[in-house]
Length: 130
Image 1: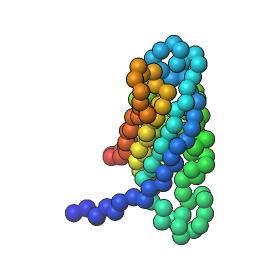
Image 2: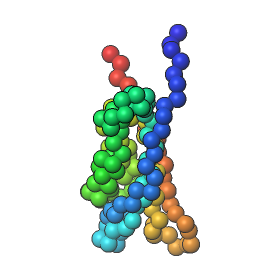
Image 3: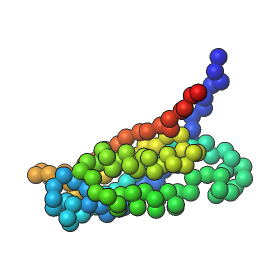
C-alpha cells in the first residue's frame, strides 16, 4: 500500500505581460503582439517555510524573467507550441511537480468583438522508473 499523497502548495504568477512574434499570419510575426501569461505551479513549500530562505523555493522573479525570455524568442505558429515551451521552462526547477500555463492572446486576429483568446495546459513532471 502506497503512502497517501497530500495536495501540493501552489505558487501563482498571474498577468505576466510579454511581447512576441507568434502566429500563423505574416503580419503577426512581423509586427508582434502582446501575450499575457498565467502560471500556477505545484510545489511543496514546507522546506522554504521552515528555513525562510529563497533558495528553498521557486524564485518567481527569476522564473518570470525566464518565461518572458521564452515568449520573446523564436516565433512559433501556435499558442499550443508556446504554452508547451513555457511549461518546459517551469518544469526545469526540480521542485515544480506540475505547471498549469495559460497563454492569453488578447489581440488575436478575429473578425468579431471578443475579450480574449486563451489556452490552458497542465503538465506534470515525468517520473522515470527503473
